[in-house]
Image 1 (cartoon, rainbow, N blue to C red):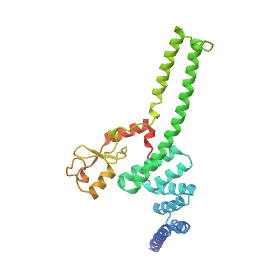
Image 2 (cartoon, rainbow, N blue to C red):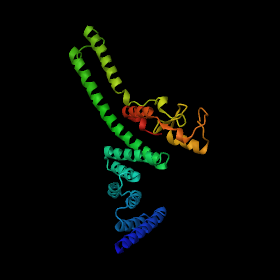
Image 3 (cartoon, rainbow, N blue to C red):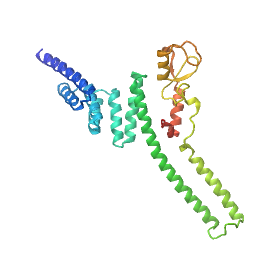
Image 4 (spheres, rainbow, N blue to C red):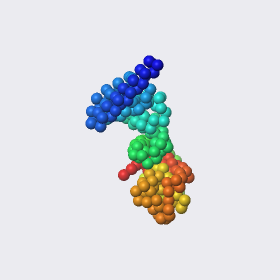
Length: 280
């Protein structure tokens, strides 16, 4: 009985310290907030929100190693913590661990969509994830470009050596020269084709929301067969009215279903054309 009372008192004190920390945080007194959350953790170390709150303070101070430490502890206590996975992802990106950072951000996004698909954090997480994936694509694209250029130059040199053209006058064209020119043009077409996926273009309309005109992130389909970005159509239903903005048919949130086919098509497109992750 005495032990139970002591634990209850500690929990109440820890919760008050959390509230104090929140007040300090809102006033940008991050050091004081960290102290309050640290005391709360000392009293009740198995409460994940105390760790994520302190991690958020460390994030504000750009102390990313401590962000990582606190978020890893929070995830041990609660595998479904959106904030912990999100901030851990950001911390790993700061360490240039792009692949691991992307994995954590993707986990945070999946969890966030399940908990609150139209919450502000979902959009924030997606933007950070998109930036990280764009960086991954940019790095891979640069390597591919260099490799293709090196291979192209090697192939052109090999063709030239095959036809012994180094010492021939520029205006001299025999059958060997003509064959060389045809093969050279064919070779260049092959390399142009190989590099097309890394050249930014216009994203196909069917992969874009009809309201935002941006590539889909979380597409949902209506009974009318029109696909919208989830957060956008939910905002429309809440602020404008319960009807389909294009067909004008009555529409309720319960009638929206994930468009898995479009979602898979978007992901396949982004996997092939990483430049499409870049946001204006």
